[in-house]
Image 1 (cartoon, rainbow, N blue to C red):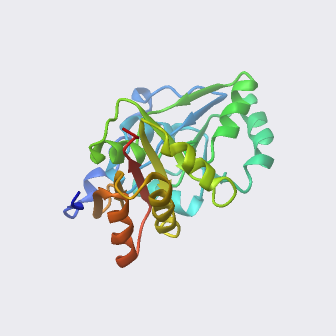
Image 2: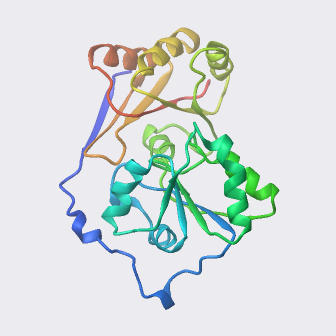
Image 3: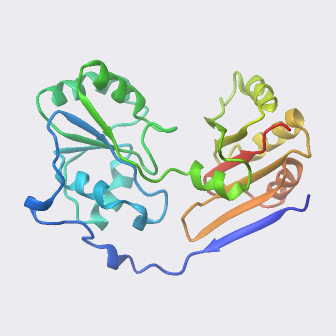
Length: 256
């Protein structure tokens, strides 16, 4: 199989067109329910990819929980959203859950966002959602951006049934998990960082064979979005020569 490149270079977006895109009068906004956690997806690159409903929720809730307030502030400032924010990330979520649930029980409305994409999908969120449901609180998850769906569709592999693995274990259990996935007949979707993508490809070649078709998407929705298709061995060779940059979605064809 010949390695195939598909690169999409965005023209300069006049993002000013989207300033205040959804800030209607108070009497025409969506109803925000008290004691409710809203799980709100945010753009994975292109700021225009946020929905009107998501903007309305972020404007009108009383508190926004952010994976990194500095990162989220760029999005919020872009849309002139001045709702108070609080950090909620993988390093503090265990100790914060109980206090947040108590605030919600007292009537506060909250939105949970991650740096990019949908919270709780390889990002913080699961613990808080579970705790809210166990406490009888309302959780509303909004639809929106997530990286693995466009990567899966662009791969050209069957998308009616697939296995999403998120990030593989960094050390313990990594090789054994890949060995299990090698037997999977459904399309496999993995997230990987630029620091480990070459290692992952090398291990996939060893476990799944050099000729297994695969696809890698990087910098999705950004100026230099790129999808590279080929065999695992060809992808490994490519990133041996070209230093990997950006966040990666690796899609591997299931065992035939």
